Length: 78
Image (cartoon, rainbow, N blue to C red; front, side, top):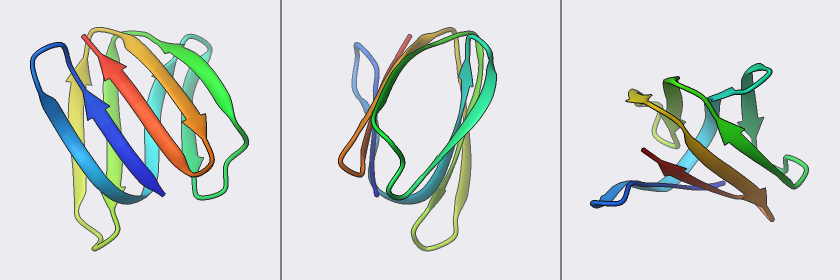
């Protein structure tokens, strides 16, 4: 799946990922390939994602929004 993480200042990450875990209002949730479409707000916490080559990353966020549609995960953070 394609993962795009952007802030108001720059593109944090754009590329292929196998999973992304996000801090939603009701708790952490993980998005994998072929996930159902969804839109969710994000609360302060950590976004964890694994790139297609296996590298794992973690980003601390104050909040944001995520949109999942047709194997594209778009995350706007602040």
